[in-house]
Image (cartoon, rainbow, N blue to C red; front, side):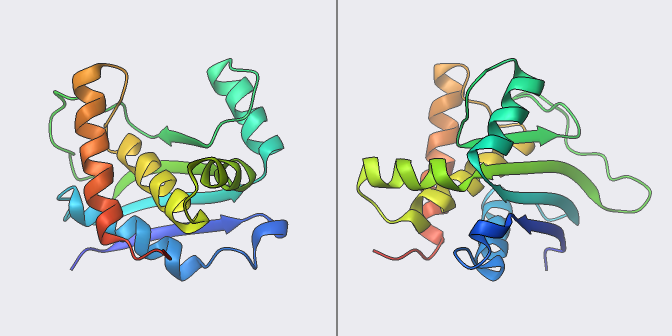
Length: 158
C-alpha cells in the first residue's frame, strides 16, 4: 500500500469549499497512476491569487497569477534516474500551490465543475513534482495523456 505523508493547507476563505479528504484522494490517485510505490512526502496548498501571484513573481519572474505552481525538491527530467530512496525511506517530492480563484475562473471558462478543474491542477502539480513537463510538444502530450488517465480515476461531480 502506498504511504503518503501529505501536508494540506487551505487558506481561510476556501476551507469550507474544498475537502482535505478529496484532495488527499486526488494526490493518491495521481501517484498510483504514475507507478509510485515508495513512501512519499509532499505539501499541497490551496491559496488565493495574491499568494500565487507573489510566488510566481518571486520564483519564476512572472508578474501575474497562475493556476498552479510546483516546487520540486529535486530536478527531474524525462531521462532522469529513478528516485533514490533517502535514509528515512521517504521520497520528499516538494510542494504544489493552487490558486482557488484561478481554478474557479478556469472551470467557468471550460464549463465544467470546479472539482474537475481542481483535480486537473492537483494532478498537474504532482506530475511536475515527479518530473513531468510540458515544455516540449512530445513531453506535453505525455503529460496531458497522464492527466487524462488520472482525471478518469478521480471522482468529480458531473
